[in-house]
Image 1 (cartoon, rainbow, N blue to C red):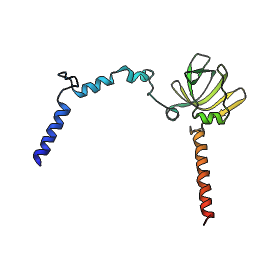
Image 2: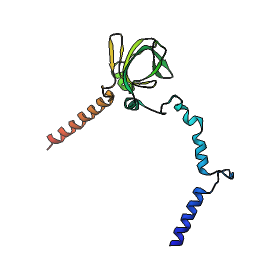
Image 3: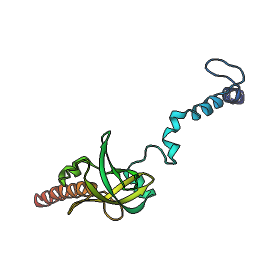
Image 4: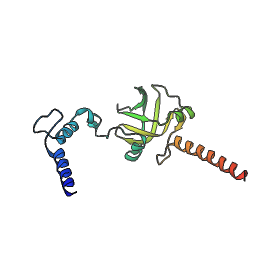
Length: 170
């Protein structure tokens, strides 16, 4: 039994620490292949602006600071942006498309807007967006998404309906 364990341990150490690659180049280990993969620019292309890659609205809430940004709305590659008078450009994260439809959001490129939300670099998790005299709400002051609350509320109503039906059937 000891021989099998020792043989297995030696094999494992050999596989991990003996230099080799899939191409069989001497002097290069699997660790250096991993390290060179981390040097690949495509992996880090989202990091060139100091942000972590692949962040979503809740991350901007967690990492950002509440601010108000005013400017002109732009639409680019399926995303709404707001450009300030000084030329700064922010991506507006409006959340769930069903919620946008439910509240009657009808944005037009070139409209003047005021966005209040959690700003992290050039991204804004929108709490509210005002155009003319109309304000659309997307999140609570603490950043909780309104579309999730309405979904949870509907689920509670659904659960309560069945609880009442079960109680009445007894």
